[in-house]
Image 1 (cartoon, helix red, strand yellow):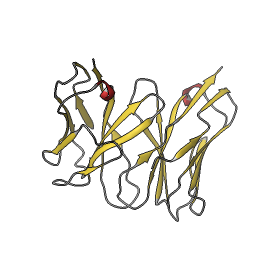
Image 2: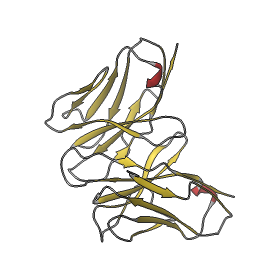
Image 3: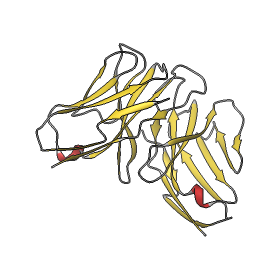
Image 4: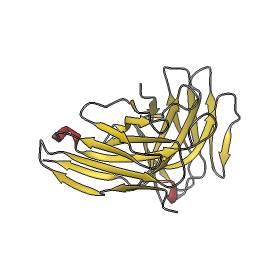
Length: 114
Length: 110
């Protein structure tokens, strides 16, 4: 079982360039999330999708857009990359709803903006 | 609002105990604990739900004080494999997105 798959694993961009981070899960989870991780800042929520067809802003949404393409896929787009967006990005998914459902994370995508 | 974790870092020798705390300014429905090894993704450790019991797994256990909006992770007789960064994630209501703290780095040496 692949779990949560993120592509690409590494990317270097120049300021102003655009790119899309892809995320796909094969666990039939309803909810999907994008977090960014910076040294000393922990994991910060960018956007999430509680179910197919819905998306909501998290703690740090500025400069990003998302698309919940279908139940399996949730992409994160940087329209005009800035050095402040240099980070490790994690996609995660879970069953959703109430109860003791837990997050499964992808391996991460390391993005550097020059 | 991010929950506050303390301490920021802990250095232990094998066999010693540690406690990591997580507190929130908002009422909590659930607290999740994750561990992340360097260069890897966070991995789930345990979850505590409002009204639930203290959880435990071998030498790692956790408590949840709903009234104080706090949770603590207890690591007893630490092993080298316990090294990593521990994150608490909190949710104010069932099904809402987790907000994580800044993490506590645990280093265990022999």
